[in-house]
Structures are given as structure tokens and as C-alpha cells.
Length: 330
Image (cartoon, rainbow, N blue to C red; front, side):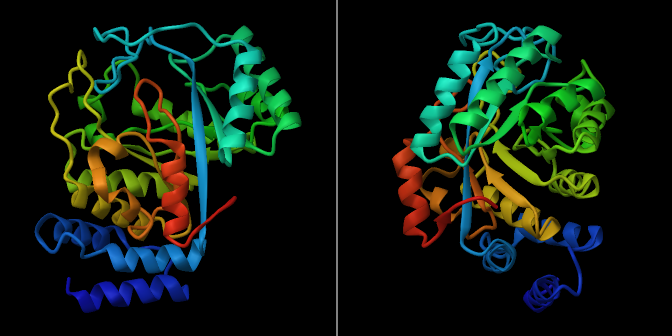
């Protein structure tokens, strides 16, 4: 595939002649990412982002609402009870703690706020705490309220929607063909079902994964197309941040330019969707963090992550402004 072909595909997407690259085209782009100019896709992904997202960049923040002791064995995760890590564990935070943190992040410049819990699923009592907190946050801030609470039932999804939560986050983590290398305690279809239940309850869906787990470029294409087929609204892209005590503690970091190419590839496959850059960006991208928008992203997570520290929030706000972009809802 020549530069002329990439230009042609970009123009077709921008003009609406096609709504995405085909699977075959995406695999060819991925092959080029492996061996060609490391900046090859970047200017074209930027054109696609600017067409559909203009100058708007949204910011999201999360809180580790329930930490550790998770029954699942995800190989990258510090919160799994199967691994011996040094993280602090705690039960679900109180309604007051969840609300106060939301108010803090609203003042810091977040547009979206997500309550994130460890574990396969929450109890009914825990769901009640989350829904009460969501209703209170909705009344006290202008934040878009999100939640990431593990597996859903139809009833739980409806309760979340009624409480004022607008978006449900549930990562697929990686491609189906690679999933059993990452997690063995639940099936990929359970994650797919939760995404579908959230959608059917009227919630927006935020679903993505972690790159750099040892997957191939073709499996990155596979994940991006699975998300496309599920018609998720937002795609969070994380990069492996190896945690001592996990099976992936010695995993190498992805080179910054490769990470940017991954963002660009996801933009070609999902031109009109929100793409958010989240955990692992500081250690992976280092001095290249300001290039995530040129690579196709239109969202960034600010503040701390679940068990790792994030960058100073003011630095991220300045980064967005210096790029000539505006913070707002997308």
C-alpha cells in the first residue's frame, strides 16, 4: 500500500464515501506500521480526527472506588487476588467520598467522571451506593457520570441508567484470539454480553483495551474491529505499565512511535468514535504525549489511574491548550 493509497482512503473517509477502512486495508496499514516510516499514518489520522471531532478534546477522570482482591486472573492487573502486588486494597468507598472526589475533579477540569471498582461484579448493596452517589453528583456538578463496575445484569444496567449514569465502561482488554493468554477466569463472551446489556439499557458504551500485552499487529486490528462491530461510543486505549508481582512484570514498554501508530490505526478503523488515551501513556509516550491528538485521539484521562500515578493535571490542560484545542464534550 503506497502513500497515494493511504491518501485516497483518508479522503474517502473524510468525504463520507466510506465509513472506515476495510479489514483487509487495516491489516495492510498494520503491516506498514511494522516496517515503514514510524510517522506514516499520523498526518492522515489527524485529518480524520479534525473532520469528525473538530478542535474538541474531552477530559475524563476516574476514582478507584473499590480496590484489589479481584477474583479474576488478568495477567497485567495489580488488583488480582491471584498476584502478589503491594497495592493498597479497600472496600467500596462511601457515597460521600465518591461525591466529594467528583466535585474535586469537576473543579480540576474533568468533563467525565467514572467510578471504577475491582472484582467480577458488585453486590446489590454496592450498586445502591453507586447509584446514590451518581444521583448526588448529577445534582452538584456538570460532569458526565460514568461507571466501570464489572459484569452487568439487565436489571443492574437499568438501575445505573435511572440514577443518572450516562456511560458504562467495560474493556475487552485485547483481541478474542489473544484473550486466553491474558485471562482464564472468565470467557470473552461475558465481556461482550456486558457491553451489549449496557447498550440495550440506553447507556453509552466506553470499551477498549490495553496495548503492548504481547499481541500482534493483526490482533490490534482484530480488537479495533470488534469494537467497531459492537458500535461502542468511546474507545479508551491503554498501554502496558508493568506492575511488580504480576505475570507481566517484565514486559517491555512499547516504543513511543509504535504507540502513536496504534492510536492512528484505531482512528482509521473507527473514524467517528471517541478515542481516549488512558493508563500507561506517561511511561510509554514520555516526551511524545502531546502528539496523541495528532495521532487521532480526541480524549485524555487526567489525574491518577487505579493503582498508578498520573501526570500533573495542569500539565495536561496546558498540553491541550498549547495544541490549539478546546476542552469540551464530544
